[in-house]
Structures are given as structure tokens and as C-alpha cells.
Image (tube, rainbow, N blue to C red):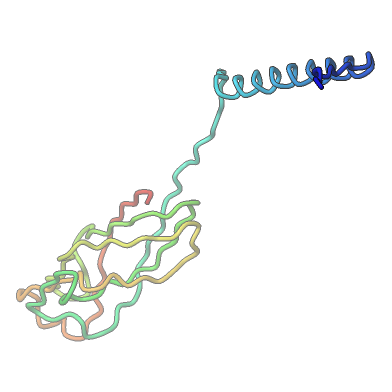
Amino acid sequence: MSTSPRRIVMAPRNVLRVAVCALLAFLGTGLLGGTAYAFWTSTGTGTGTASATTFQPVVVSAGAAPPGQLYPGLTANGTTSGGDLVVQASNPNPFPVIVTVTLNGTPTGCSTTGVTIGAPATFTLPASSGTVTLTVSKVLSMSTASSDDCQGATITLPLATSAVSN
């Protein structure tokens, strides 16, 4: 007994359904592929604008240092010796600033103070800070040439500052 292969005959309705599905699959693949290609090769040009802020002056004024820190022969190294410099400062800028303090004239309070800023006096002020009191530790020196009337005196230091954004 021999058997002949069977033929599958599709009804016209099934042929149409298969053809529509194939066409939709082909079109979908093409559209997605075109979209992917566009995402990877897209270019463009244009302009943008930004507005920079204006640097506002940092305000630094005198503060009161603890008494008894200065004496003739004191040498400041900024880490283990020197007198403390106390200031009040504020930063109206929306970014932190680094402030450097230097002498701007001769200290007063006695005949010959001999007081200098002997180590770098720098500190960072946070953004938009109100008035804060800061101690810059171990930055003041006092020479042996200081006069006797400096004993127990309050010494006023004329300061200059410079500030840069941090």
C-alpha cells in the first residue's frame, strides 16, 4: 500500500490573512529599523543663552580675638604656633568663595606692635552666608621689637581682602 503525500490547500480566506500578516510584519520591521537608524544618526544645530551673575563684594570686618595670644617672639606657621585672627564675614554670592586676608597698613593699639600676618590667612565662606564669625588659626606673629605698652593692649589690624569663587 502506498501513500501519497498530502497537500494542504488553504482556503482563500487564510491566504489573505497570511499575506496581510506578512505585509504588516515587513512594514513594522521597516518602520522600527528606520526609527532606530534615525536615533543613532540624528544631527541638529541651534543656539542657547545663559546669563552669568555679577560677583558681589564679600564683606569682612574685625572680630575680637581671645586675649593673651600674642607675645614678643611669636612666629606663626599656620599649624602649631601663632596667634588667631578673628573676623566677621559675609558672602552674598550664590557660590562659595575663598577669602585671603592681608595687612593693609600698620596695626595700632600700642607704640610698636610688631604684629604681622605670618602665615597665609585664608578661609572659605559658604554660598549666600549671612554674617559669620570666623577664626583663622595660628596666622599672627609678633616680633621681639614690640614695645612694652603692648602688654594687655587690644591691637587693631587694618585688613585687606581678596575673594575668588571656589
